[in-house]
Image 1: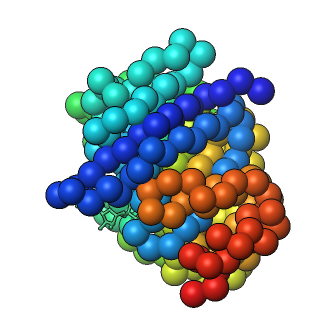
Image 2 (image 1 turned 135 degrees about the horizontal axis):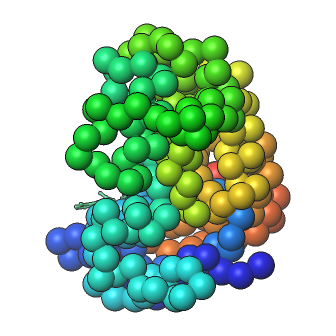
Length: 246
Ligand code: ADP
Ligand code: MG
């Protein structure tokens, strides 16, 4: 399968500290990938670089079949090119219904100005219902988002991202603070999403990563320490020394 995103030789320093150090990473279309690694390994900074929030000092970041460089693009241009990102804390509009949050996210793709006055057409309404079903919120559509559980808010936010049809979805620690049942549901949502797009999941919980059933990249000190199946990387002595054995 063809490469969707290629990061090569990327480094970034903050006040002389190399948070990302000659990092290379590739993901294909419709691939799921987990990124694990100790605190401070550079996982979030990696996502900041891909989404244009942080510009690297060196290296290249290449996107799509036209091999476009993301480095000269703004965060909003990168988002419009098809890269969606979920931050650790949910950022749903609590005073709005689940339905309206999804409607706004759908609208957002076309024009950001009048999102609050948006009423979807039939096609939009069908899409909202399909996405609600995909994230398991069909029977919550008319509730206020602020009344949802932590897990449901996270699913709503994933739904809001999916409504924009990203070709790459970046998800930072989605299972944090979730119950085991909520985690399993989150796994299902991400696995389903990865059938039609690339999904990169940063996660600490090994049980969660195992259920994702995908290739794993281990980051350490801003570089790739190991890559392969979860069993492959967790039996790697370097990985045991810096991450698992601690
Ligand atoms: P992870 O997500 O793997 O825990 P981060 O990417 O958040 O790691 O951080 C990697 C390192 O870079 C940490 O030492 C962190 O303190 C540092 N860092 C990240 N962002 C900044 C920033 N904007 N300014 C200064 N240091 C930063
Ligand atoms: Mg982080």
